Length: 450
Image (tube, rainbow, N blue to C red; front, top):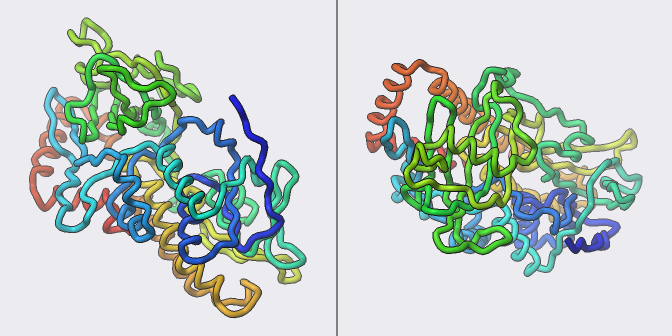
């Protein structure tokens, strides 16, 4: 692998964005389009080492509407899969548990757009480059302190340092910027996650199937619940193939399945054999590679990427903070995305919430930067504080929703056979009511929690 040398880092900037995932990139794009050009964006990883690793795979209507305001929705929509919703399989039959197309009267994007995070980042990175801004790599932030000349000095593992008036922490759930700013990050309800929770551990994997498509419809996500666990299968764009192009009768799909504590801890990068064995146990018979179960076996031909995930719920106490020394010198720290909140991936809300954090932040941040007066600490913070409170409330709503989803899934899996059967048919009946179908789609779309 040809790893490029680090790009040269400027000594100072008005805004430093730490983290060049989708949320950091869209923050930089939005600032450029607001006329704020003195920005630097850094990321800890070599682009070459990032590869195809990708967790987030879904963009909802509220996020696409927000992206559309800055001209960033169409490039994504043109390559992603426009999913109608979610089909749920159990007892050899299925029903549409979520029908996003029911939102056609409420949004120009009545679908869940499916594409891997790596493709989203590639599109955003290209857009940012067209605006004249490059991502500086690899620069891993390790510290930050107020500067005697004003602003904040962020130091990196390489020994480099940059001074900025505003530091935007978009560096994920293990955010260094949040930690060195002294901002607590904790479960807002202090309930933790029960040790017996069957969906506490998840595995995500992008795989290529050979033989026939495991999905019954190429425009729906599909879930299957069995006594052994839950398996979700997600269609991805055919243009996303990994390092090897797709051959005839090959299909690239995202998988997500639970690993109960009784099965131990999943390996850090679960291998193909581990993924295949879990598909055979937790998926429907038509997805099995076992000839004794499926007369037309489907095999995982190759593994593009895989990862494990352990459920965690936390939110930052504050999304915007003055960081100053005893002499009153310092700058402003702002948190967006996973640096500000983390929760279960069920419902595909994480990246969506973070992108909306960033897009709704930038007009207010640009106004603050352009306001009269040189020192950011002397300027009125009320609108930034209002943004921070608003986004924190949105994060709390999402945490509550994903906790309920996790509890519901866990309850279904731990119920006895009779209760599971009753739950399935009650769920199916309720989901057939048009009003309920629309309300469920509304919740998942983010339109009620922008």
